[in-house]
Length: 141
Image 1: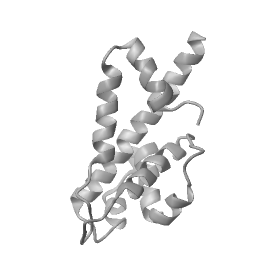
Image 2 (image 1 turned 120 degrees about the horizontal axis):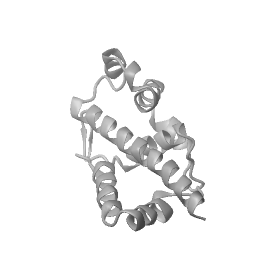
Image 3 (image 1 turned 135 degrees about the vertical axis):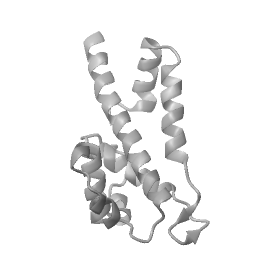
Image 4 (image 1 turned 90 degrees about the vertical axis):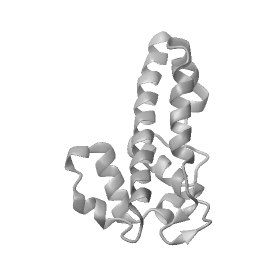
């Protein structure tokens, strides 16, 4: 809550490496906003709450929490097998198995599951950047 990408990380990385912040921000935004507006067999679905829940859950796994987000949404939208999969891929990728991949969202398309992987890996990268940039900020002050 006290060190976010939007308020701190983006500007610091742009100061250290001009234009890199913009490239990273665009990369995060493309993956975060990617949607076909479908979930399994349902079309015309607004998936923004689900995407936000996944992104914030990954950050939560790494100890980053936001005061303005209701984490009750995570428990409502992410079933237990999906949370286990997300945590394993984000924290222990070498322990990820095909069985874990097939266990969550059994009726969903592979493209939707791939999108979950893209979301969680970009959220993980952003979380790691936030920790590193926060350390740099502390060192500089």
